[in-house]
Image (cartoon, rainbow, N blue to C red; front, side, top):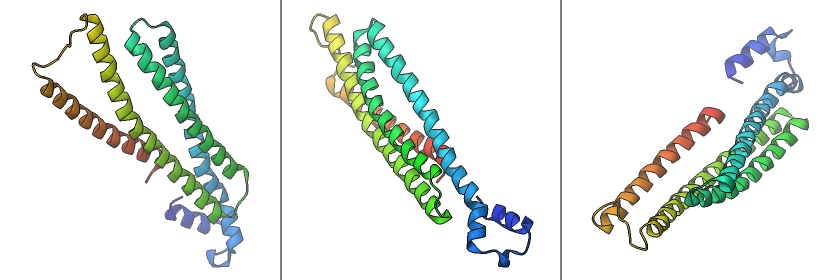
Length: 193
């Protein structure tokens, strides 16, 4: 709730703001504090649903797909997404506990902020952990597939190995930086600063 909204609410209430007790003001604001927790809870449900959909799609392709490196890659990614799903369920459980229990306003806001900080922290940790794992794993699978398809010969995309590794390194760093800023933007967009 913004300060201006609080002022309007206090002015519209019967009597002057100076005559309101702390409990009356907390009761007026109680619904607003819970609505923040409800927004977080809705957002978590949205992410849980999409995580489950992606896990199902990844498992489906891993079972029915024809290109074996992609099957392996998506199988591992499905397992990693399951770990993220547990984090989402844990945070939803904590958020649900906040919305179902009546706390004083200050305690409700503190709990909501604590859950939000924990969620953002875990989200960024998992995102940053998954980037190098997925990128390295994909390069290894492509190299193995290229060796299998060429009869054991090494296949290089450039004329020298160091140029290939330099390209891959620059690509990793660029992709990781892009994902970092995208994740920051995404979290800021949905959950604020």
